[in-house]
Each structure stands twice: as C-alpha cells, then as structure tokens.
Length: 197
Image (tube, rainbow, N blue to C red):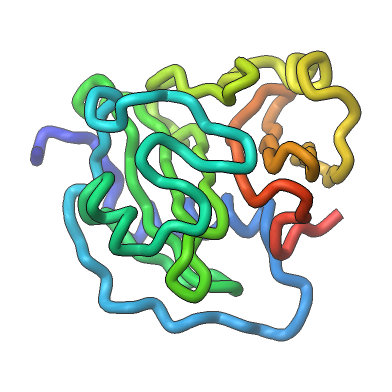
C-alpha cells in the first residue's frame, strides 16, 4: 500500500495529539499510562472492512464497542498505524479511506487500562476531501454545518470553544469553521475524561 498518501509518522502523531488535546485535555496532574508495545500495521480501514459507517452514540463504531479490549480492537480492525500516549491512557490510530488514501478520516481509539474509553473520528487534515460519509446514528455527518448538530441534538449539555457535547447520549462534536470536523463517542451519562470548558 505504498501508493497511499499518508503523512510521515511524526506528522500524523503531532496532528493526532494536537486534535485530541484540543478536545480532551486532562486538567489534573499527569496520569499518562505507558503505551504498550505498539502492534504496527497499515492502520487502513476501508468502508467495506468496517461494515457500517455509523458512530453509535454512547456505544462505539462497527466492530468496536466502548469497553472492548485492545485485543478486540485489533481483531476487528487490524493493527493500528500508530500508538500515541495520552494524558489518560493511550490511543490507537487508524485511517478510514474509501479511495486508496486520497481522502480519509482519522479514527482514534482511546484506551485506558486496556479498555476502549472513547472513539474519535475526525477529518484528516489536508486530505483533499470529505472522505467516507461517517455519521452518527441520528444522521449528523462530518462536514455538516454546526447548526445541524443543534437542530438534531438540541442545546449542548457540555460545551467548549470548539466542541459541543451531549452527556446523556454519549456524543460530542468537534467544530471547526462552523462545520463538524470530528465526532467523539463516550459512555453515556458521563463527561469525557479531560473535557475542558
């Protein structure tokens, strides 16, 4: 798969960390978990391999549910392209692409104590297009206007400058230039660890 236009590892890692941190910065003392030996693979997931392009609020994304183990993630989606240390746990990084890597979405599976705590899908910076049409079960897609989030989900229960979250549903939206740039699913009835207002 050398024809894919995936950025060098250091660049991808920097982007992933920056985007994750913009939404989820742990405000307390550093609690970084040691990243296990990273099982590196291509990290490429195709819509066909994924099955469903629906992020289920408070539940997960096809084949990977919140609470699943790292081994379950690898069985469902293969080995990630990167493992990145987070202030709370670590993240597996995948790329969801339907056109050989010309466009795509970054899928970050955030693990804490070997369990999936959150799943974040976000537009791949400089990807050249929208990528696969990933959406929530209530129909909000990446690249939809931010007004669609409020129309479908109502007033956010948690909000920051660039994000709107809905605790009861277990979903949050990263907003960039008034469009949905990312979708985060987390356990319903909770605030995502590290959410900062």
